[in-house]
Amino acid sequence: MTNRKRADKIIMWKIKKNYGFLLTEAKKTAMLKTVASGVKCMLEKWKSLCEKKPLPWYAITAVDILITGLVLVIFALFHHVIPHAGRPLGSTMGTVQTPAPTYTMSTVQPYGTADVMPSSAATPAPTYAVGDFTGTFPNYDTGVGAIYSYQSDDLKVAITKGYGTNSAYLVADVWVRNIKNFGTAFAGDRYGTGITEWPLQTANSVNAVFAVTGDYYGARNEGLVIRNGTLYRSSLTGDTCVIYADGSMETHESGNLNLDEAVKRGIWQGWNFGPELLRDGKAITDFTSPLRGENPRCSMGYYEPGHYCFIVVDGRQEGYSDGMTLEELSAIYAAKGCKTAYNLDGGQTATMIFQGQIINSPCEGGRRSSDIICFFGGAQ
Amino acid sequence: MSKKELFDIVTTHGSIVLGIVFLVLVRLDMINPAMNFVSSSEGQFLLTIFCIFALITSVKNAAGIHKQRLKNWKEKNRKP
Image (cartoon, rainbow over all chains, first blue to last red; front, top):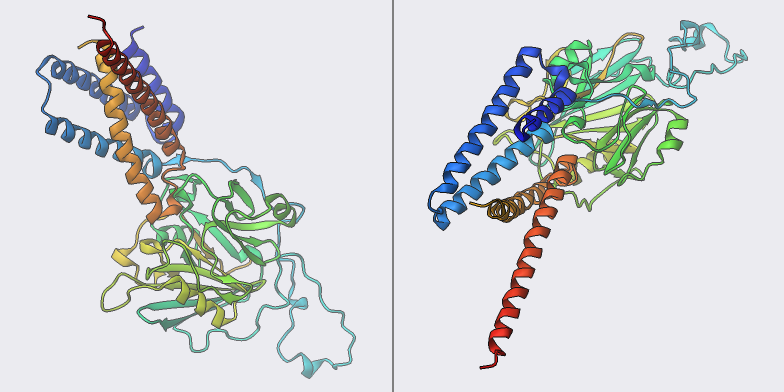
């Protein structure tokens, strides 16, 4: 077997191994033929070039620059363009049973209890399963004064608009009755790098009432990925954010998370982007992130189990909104009384979706992303 | 062109190309560290090739310099 034939075979094997799931037989053959003819053509060109007089220095420099560009394009192609499917590594719920909506109407405090039940009645305080927030779920309309509102027995979303120094932003106040109402979804319902979809499409495919874009995990090969109680990627680099099965949210700096301990406690969701926006519930004023300038942003905050806050800032739109600095965003979360807050993927990605519509103004019309954070209306 | 010459061209120009590529990647990593350009598996693969090319080129260069110095010394100290 000649070297070229062997090289062709290796290329074909690699394509089959890594991208076989995407290609039909006809496409595979066509791709192999294109690669083989390309290699052959390049070898012939090289041979004829070698037989000629050596090129002048400026031509050699130009060729080097062209090859550099080509290498960068191929690098980008493999780094974040070509989809690469991944597999889940296991459950992150530890010993915690998958939270189920165990509440019944009898355990929910009805309106006007005092009128029908004497206060001295020794009714034992209802106990709820892990991830069931019936005890704190509001029984009033949280959407008074909001520009968008969704009120149901399992989910309450109230969205208001705010204005910063040079920015316009949307704040979503979200209550869930059960942790299962707090979901995440992958683009195209597939986990892997380079797999993207328009966030609105992803949100509609899972019938989300409310959604924001996530951490765009698919653009990287590193960083924690835990979705709906399943571990997909365990590498701990950079700042991480986890939502436990009991509804509490924690942020950890520079991979400073004991994953084994956390899994024992039961992790429901885990992201890798950051930075964290609050330290001990207080605003941070000394961010070192290179992304700390005015930018479109997507972020989430935490008040108590079952009660969360999402802020999406529009930006890079002259005359409307430039964007927000991390310091300003941190100050907003602190003023709202959040205990922790976390910055997600912003820029062109930052999108907020409510009942099948994009309600913010993503810069340059937004872009495809690999995941969303979504909330469901009914009992899951 | 001999195989040796071809090998020299590939290693030297490969070093130049990969050197520029890594300057670009390091700069991109500064702007958007979340993308992990340098520390990704693709970046590590390119870095390995860069190291091999750089090592071959510099060892050959060092050997050439040593040879040249030896030659100069011999010429200087040649007895008439």
